[in-house]
Length: 601
Image (cartoon, rainbow, N blue to C red; front, side):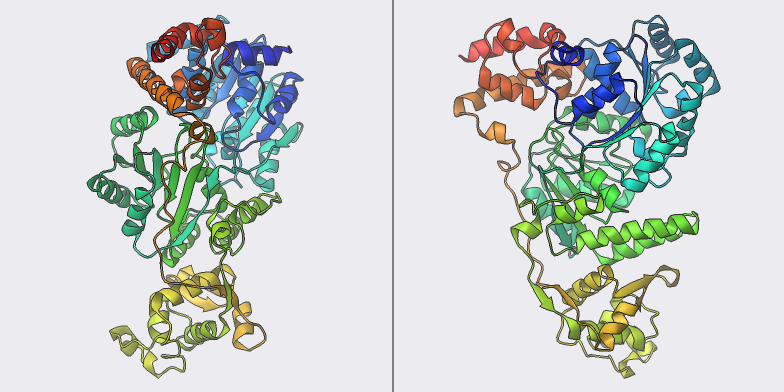
């Protein structure tokens, strides 16, 4: 058995690496710089933890959040790995003690934030340690082209010159080609390998819903996932609190999370989410990075994210255990206006704004796609795929219809009113509504007035969304979201082109799911007898995790408990044959679980 395989088995309890892990580990062990782009749930952490345990000097892991550092450190300690963690959430004396364990050679891994690492004092102290490796987690934060650029991450470019003998290993699940190249340039001047394992998360079900009534649509979705852990993203702090209260009133266990809450309350909410089963967090994007809870069964967006990369990253928090998980996005044209306004008002240069607008357009194209959503998403990241059979378009393929005439009515109305008005007024004029605003501008006298009277408002809203996604219509943010006609739209108006779109039907309830569907295939395959044992094992896990004050998966993951329920080990050697049970974890927790198994037989 090779040294990495030996560490994998003895420390982490696994017989073999997942696809892609061993290749990245080989690069690191050969002391090659590497940027690894691996889908969430592919096991990025083991790719650097295993080499770190084999190197003779300390490895430094740069991590963006305190919670992420603490949970990763807790998981490693449960496996018997001596790891140090230094951050602002700990008293000074704790940080001093942690540093002593590193400087003495006792701890093989040190977790730090980029801000603390790059202080002159810490950089000077690092020189005396001569680290074997620097690991940059969430590496997309390094790139100014990425969807979550953090200036403090950019300062990590100094590592390659300050520590030329150290391996630099960067990991992310979210990076298009431009972002990947920028990360490699910043961190190691391109002198290293870029390994792209892939972006596909086949266990995630993908769905998009046009906004009608956000609360009602959310309530319908939640009925299908009652009792499951999940994240609901909302755009504003006010909405997180409103939606959370709405869910609690409907009998769900839900909490709000946003940057306006006191830090202790945010910390407590995050800790509860990590440790409790069936808790739903309604949050702004302040909640997410560093959330490594494997059994999140759904992610629901009540508003449009900023880009396809951001959306991919956010839905990637679901189903990290590999079991089926649901994702859904509810959006309307007002979301598009707000997102474009955010981009235009962010104070960045024109190049950055143009790039972000193109990213938003790519997300709109995904939302209005008539083909397999997974194909559209993966194509954006440069991958080809077959239809997935696990998205709403595959489940219910849209019917394509000729909508040239209705679109002409809308385009005519936009032109006749001077291209100065948003969706609501354009629809009112096109449908021949008698409103105060229509009369104020005498738009009842325009040629397009009432031409689309036979079309309902929801139909025209859907038509405008599709025309915006296909670039037949544009939106002028400087004029408060006024709709304008593009060259493609004028070609339709002039009769030179036709417009085909997805058939727009009356809103239907969101596709429901039952809890059985979002259990893992392995769990569904258990016999009734094994299911009963699994329930007992989970109760024991909850009892131990609560006593430790740590998330349940730190003790054993669901996958390990399922394997335990199937194999029913009755002695220490048999327990060590269960996937995910290493020697130290067996010593800490094994006897208690063996007792549960023996009492069940």
